[in-house]
Length: 471
Image (cartoon, rainbow, N blue to C red):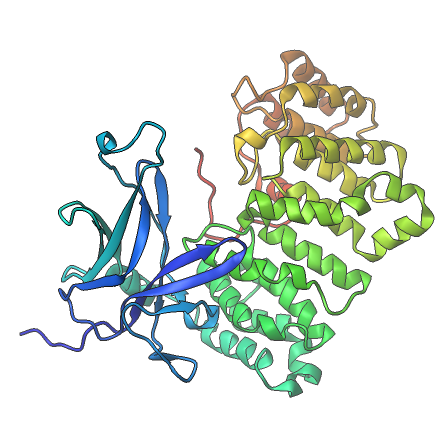
């Protein structure tokens, strides 16, 4: 006997727009029965064939958006992130019939969508050709297993009370601005969940979602803003690792142009540190926007003028340096320019010396954390910088030695690895400087970073449960 009742949630197709959250099209509304096909005849789409494409689905349990917009099949609505939950994206290459296309024509076909929930727990979407109904491209999303997986995760017993606390402090209640609770929020979360460095990945992302819901009220007080930036950035680091992190980044990126409310040196430092922590989820265009905004403070000329340099320090100069070096999707030419600036500053200026050496090493590193190998600075360029580093006193300035280790770290890829001659010189100097043995090993052989070196390089430890995979 089959018990009815239909789907417990509505399913939407996320139609993305550049630098916006975009719109959501309701494919199947809440209550739709299994096996019932819904044909969205009122909308047509251009389906791209022959190359990888991404389909993003959202779910919602709301019956209405606002007071009057009833959720029903075919509804198109602007996205309010508070009312939707993302599903993992579906990435596929749909094949077409190339004989039907002109030689230089983009492989696209006009389609309508037919959708249904299947008895095996999938959402089936068929892209039906407008010209030939027999020509269909089928997509299937696991929705029942996804829901079951979410329900079976063993959440920390302190998670729900912690989320409730965040929701209360970042709710519409303005009294929270002066409350003691907002001042001790970080301590309260650690009291409920344990030391924050030990929070698991599920806990971290669950807290991000709670903070994200309160993002519009993050500027209620200086303490609200400080806690929001520090804790959301910590929980969202390094900006990727979960199937729905791209959705979270979309919501977060909308805050960038708003800036901060409380513009003091510490506030700016927290702001730039926040963007460094989530930078792994930012695309090339977003990272170039950030660099365009901060480059005037990083330019060597800014340090020569006392007024300009004070302005840079007031804006959180050191945090900007570390952020710029963490933007791994920048063009190589931009990385080379930044690294050249920081090398000159590290050698000729005593202020922020460690930050400059750190940034140089990160920019010229042979192995990126998340960026493409195509954006790695060339070995030829690195070898032009090495003589300057080899002239430094690594005993007095170990961060210069660490930068050199990153620049000469062995990958096994001849196109990336420095010459054997430079490798030998660096190893000899590391030994003479009594550098840690694991630094020598990173230069001499293909080896993973230790936990302490990883934290030193990336500025934070990777969250528990997140492990980088080799390509």
